[in-house]
Length: 138
Image (cartoon, rainbow, N blue to C red; front, side):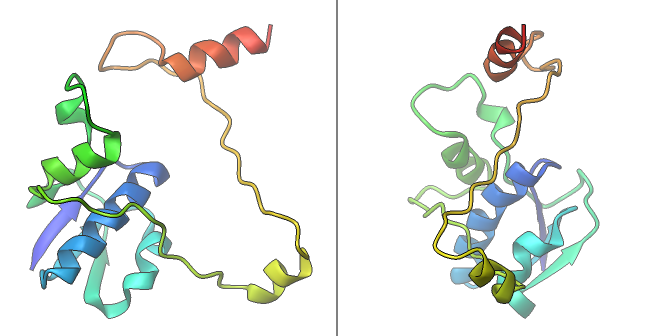
């Protein structure tokens, strides 16, 4: 069994879920290093979820290809994990409380993550998303 990891954030885990789905579909047995076990719950017993650590056999993260043009972050995660063929980016998830979802009626559910001000260690500056957030809050 090989271990796989992405970055430590929730968004990173969503990317890794697509990579894991693809690799499991190819017959690989994986232990996923993640702080977000619920993201991988749809894979059931096909994967093992273990504590996050940067030490892993497979790294599915986009930072190694940060300066490469012509690919998305998800494609870079796949490439860094050794996958060369196209992989579908989708979220395998079913609500754990369908009654709550049904009680909301036909209204769409929107989840918003407000950009956080932080320093981007890769570029030495604030990410573009944060510059806009700061300007809009003036």
